[in-house]
Length: 136
Image (cartoon, rainbow, N blue to C red; front, side, top):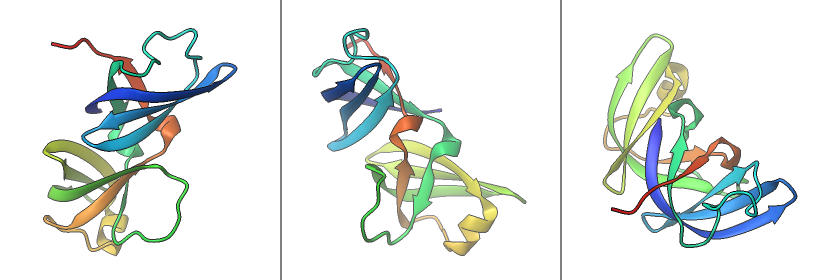
């Protein structure tokens, strides 16, 4: 599970669904939460949260240009790769923090991925979970 620390900056709610913006290392990430801000105390601007998402929910893009609906774009550099017969584990350096992506080996070959390459990790807002964290 990928874990990043962030702070909620904005929340838009409609019924039982909220779209929360979270500042993480200078970037704004979004999370779609099936819970209104009236129900969840952590959905308040200024609240410290953990941003969680599975390794299998991270897509990778190289030389991405044009418009895309995904707002969670994490510019990173490939630290290491472990290629298997079907799946490849890619460790990214995102502003000094590790993010792991598990993609198909076919995709890794098609993108000609290698350590040192600059890529973007892409995560849909509905695949992001927010958990309140205590400041220390």
